[in-house]
Length: 633
Image 1 (cartoon, rainbow, N blue to C red):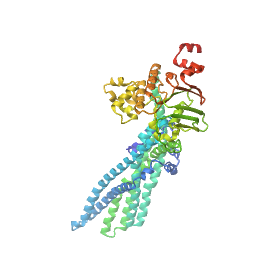
Image 2: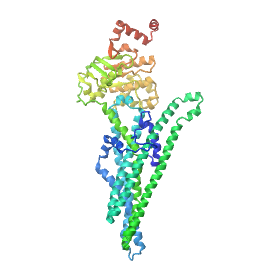
Image 3: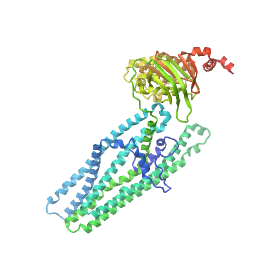
Image 4: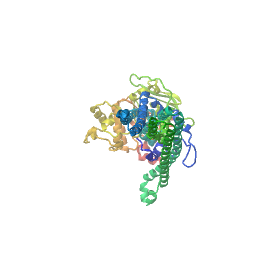
């Protein structure tokens, strides 16, 4: 749940940087007004946010019968509250005239008890049903978010900032939950009750019903619009200031040691103070506005009550029985305040919810825009005999430089191929093309003659992938290794650890494979983390292994040992290995050196070393041949 209205602005400010996810401090709500420019909010700006929605309306339409039941229960809560005051007023007036028989007031007594019990019962059941429905929807939204992100999982870090993804998970979905509970449900109930009250008043006087309709329109239409206009500008301002404050404070904390060394503690303490003061001033203005807004709503209801009393005195005092009804009508109005006052606060929270909805819809549009046309899927029968890149040309977009230019490569069954070349030559891109995450502008990529785009359903069975910094989850060693094969036994896990030469290290731990790796695997060294990640691939036993600089950041000795172990664990499986180093290259069957998007050198490592002077010099420099370095100098 989000905080109450008076506390909500603090939460908005807190999420300013995270919800934006751009680090620019730009607000994502419609920029129709600011607190001081006197602009007007354009409702169509909000309607545009919801026009092509993939997250809100589809689930609001889901299970309509339960939604109707929720609205009915919410309506009955306030109907019972109004009816309780109505019958109580009638009972008091009727009893004050001292009826000669208790049976004359027995029915109002029974109804008073019934409505008194009915109000909390309906309220309780309504909350149960609404929360059950919302939690059910939110669980589906989380699944939808996972599926949306998984479509672009290979480029998640590249395309989506960490803060943005965390915001989607931690804030925006929760905001949608509150959008249902705090805005949609109360607003729908209030508007339905508006119609019911008007019709009920029409039974006594259509003139009074029309006047009551207009007065309630002030509470349900005019005041919410004013509240929306005011909160939009303040939300944008607070979010922008909070983003700037977070940027300054975060950068300063990262350089905290330099602040201490230079003895500028006072300057450090003042960082972000101006932004904080602006945010605090904006929040104070909103709280003051909310107090005056709620007071105005109370005044409107006071005017309604006075008007009803005057009207009743003029039209319903011709007899004693009519006078009893007049007092009851006036009393029945007061419980409606609790229902109608929620609409103005709900409108004030629309910028927050619209912002979250925009983030989610933008995510869907970004991910879908990067997806190609669906391709009919095929199954891959038998072992992998060949992987072929046939005259592949690729660039990341119009106007972008060509990374691969007429690239052709054949990888036979069980072959170990190393891709080398300067940074930015498209080595990792080749892996992404093979996985099917990218599509070439021309040419084809096939496995056993089948396009990789038609093998995406088989992808998990075909490829084992180890990147530069394999991620370990904060769970046990066994669960991390089982990530590729959840049903694997403990014996299988130990066998995989033995294949990567980590079994003795794990056995020396008190809890063995049940030892926690700690957050991001910090319990282990870089080389050990890579070995645990490689154990996943060994356990998964895929026919193709893709390695994207798996030894980066390791010392030369650890790098050589790890690569020797990788080649040993790979066995007769095909392997495509991206590397900047020539360390361990002698174990590869073939070396492909990329330059300017084309293959500059290709062949067996020993043959290239013997016949290609450039390759020989690069090898000697990389391995650390001091004599070669001296000659090169």
